[in-house]
Structures are given as structure tokens and as C-alpha cells.
Amino acid sequence: MLVRELYGTEYHKRVLVLNASDDRGIQAMRNKVKSFAQKIVTKLESKSLADFQIIILDEANLLTNGAQSALGRIIEDNSSQKRFYFICKIIDSIVSRCAKYRFKCLK
Image (cartoon, rainbow, N blue to C red; front, side):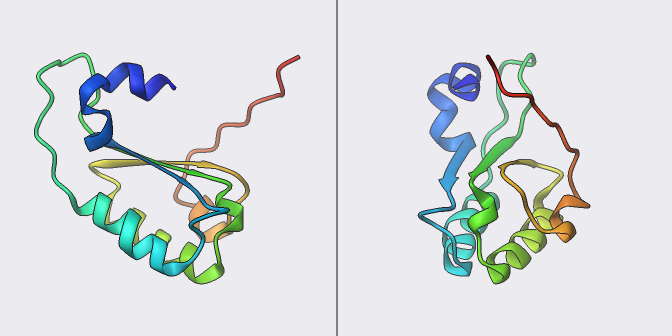
């Protein structure tokens, strides 16, 4: 994973990866994503890396509607210091807060 290479030993402080097929409810958003987003990490010594935390949600289309709504609020509150990546199809209220990148399948 690219972020593992970028952050090295800082990886666990700076990156949260959730598989929404396992953690799909509002409690997961509150207990895992929100608490991770509220953590403050020290500035990186390397100026070549972006100094923010990353939250990756795989299969986020499986999140419950309540969890997606809670996630929208978390994004609004933390988007200046955190970056959220979704691997999925998600509700319009979250899509409106995102830059979309579409990738074609590799042969």
C-alpha cells in the first residue's frame, strides 16, 4: 500500500483503514472513525510528505444510512487535517463533499 511506504513508522498513527462490510454501523463511525479523526498527531519532519491523516473506507456502500450521515458530519468537522478515501458507491450528500476519481479495470 502506497501510504505504508509514504509514512513508514508513522503509518499506524496516520492511517485508518476500515472495511465497511465488517464495520458498517453508526457505532463504528463514532467509535473508530470519529475517535481517529479527533486524534492530533505531531508534525512530520519530512517536508516532502503531506502532513495529514488518512481514513480509507473500503466497501463504504455497505454502510448503513445512519452511519453515512454520521460520516458526513465527521468529514465536515475534520476535512482540513484529514483526507477521506472511499472505495465504493456512496450517498449523494457525501459525494457532494468529495473529488471523484474513476479508475478503469486493469487488464
